[in-house]
Image 1 (cartoon, helix red, strand yellow):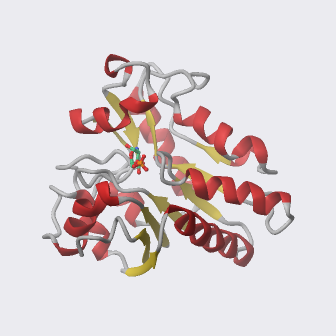
Image 2 (image 1 turned 60 degrees about the horizontal axis):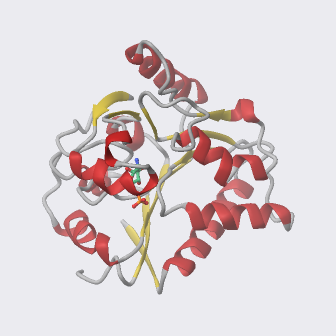
Image 3 (image 1 turned 45 degrees about the horizontal axis):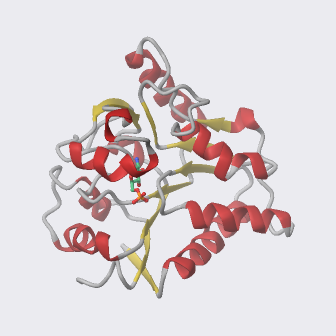
Length: 241
Ligand code: GLP
């Protein structure tokens, strides 16, 4: 794993933006895997800025998001669909028919998981997958215990994950209990992975990721088996390693 150490969150967002812009420019028809959560927000802000300054175009970019809550309508402001439109898609020249997220608002989630996995296969591969790191080592919504060979599937969210994400909701009881996530097997097939980690509260998770046993009990450790992973992390996140 290649580690890029930066001072703080601003520097992380800046580095990540340069990284993503270079990839988009380099590839003819880039396929990006996108992540949600607080960590990539600064990156998305800078990507919008880069687009406005004509440093990048999203015309030929296709995207697949990692995950989505089950049971939320797209128009719910806590859905990841809403997040992506609000934080990126509405502000750049991406074609909305090039954008894919799992749909959490369906009657048959199993069918939706198969549909999503098929869409990713049809695209060929994901060129660059963005990832954040959950406090318990989750990537996407692959909670501890998720199989390293899993494909897009439904998950029961850990109480700790629901608590960590409760800040976005009115109350803990409104945080969904289930989500759809790309599987670890799906994520690992990406050609390249860019992991973003910021802040002291993630320091223990980063230590575990880099020094712990590679195990399904801490899903992010699987990334050490991937040949092209770059982690951009700030001093807080790297403070225990
Ligand atoms: C959420 C998302 C993940 C994200 C993680 C970390 O649960 N499903 O994709 O990487 O939490 O989020 P944050 O960046 O807000 O710490």
